[in-house]
Image (tube, rainbow over all chains, first blue to last red; front, side):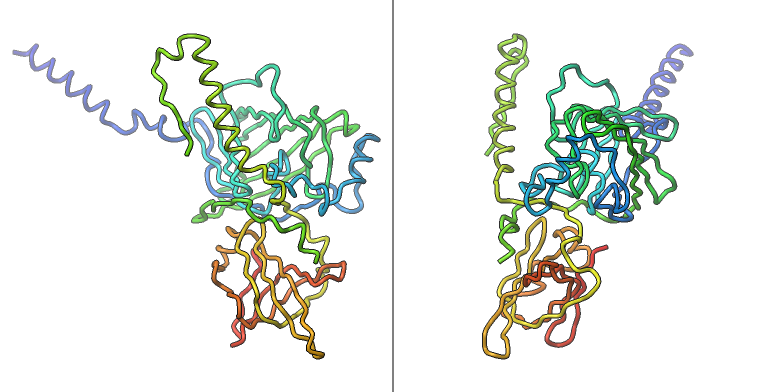
Length: 228
Length: 147
């Protein structure tokens, strides 16, 4: 009779264990170990030029020639509704929502409703097919998300005024939640074919509780004709 | 519209099966991508460099069209000059998500509305402005500043 009672106790104990939400909580939300960057974030100030007037990027001759040809009304890649690429996508004056799942950090940008995937469970594949936004992998260093991105196709501007880049672009970001309402992304840009040395940029974001990412379909096809 | 075939496990056991899946995937992506490759659609998040940000210009006229689309909404108005001639003006606004956050809607202005558009005029002197606000005939204002 005691043995039978013990069996019931074990079964009841097992049932209770599996019923407890905490047992499986880690699969439903960022694990207890990962810092929480989630929320809807908006840049706190717009920086159309990452090198403001009076400063000079460390251009190679090729890059300087490219930059001189840049014309926001004529040859900005955005004029064809093409992706902004990295880092420009992180500087747009539109909100983004950061979501975290066990193997990815996702950044859903209102700009073009583009989804940026930062893979947390792997390294860069060999022989990456070059893409607009590159391949991003991330690791936690304490409370900082360190993101490494390579594999760019060179077809975007690095900022809103025309900084060029090549397929050799390598972007490192250090992203951390400064306080509950503030997120900061520090960028290091490296591209030996376009810049003689690496350079840095930074963007701070403010939390927007209650904001939802709106639909953004690029369906306006008359912009270039508005001069009339 | 998009036929996504639920494959049975057996289909993926061969390299040929995987090639078939890849083809479906590429096909799906090609359709989605082609929807975005309309050459005239624009994205540009440009700076305010093309506008005179030091002064505000006010123009009063009749709305002919309110274009509610991304990346920018536009208000087109017709202005009657003193000599009886009409001029067309274009006011550029922010994207729809940002406008909605400051209470704009697709029918905030309608063709026929008599309004004043207030904004930063294009540096090149054309009849274009980056909208700051509109003023309705009854004096009510609606700000277009989103940040």
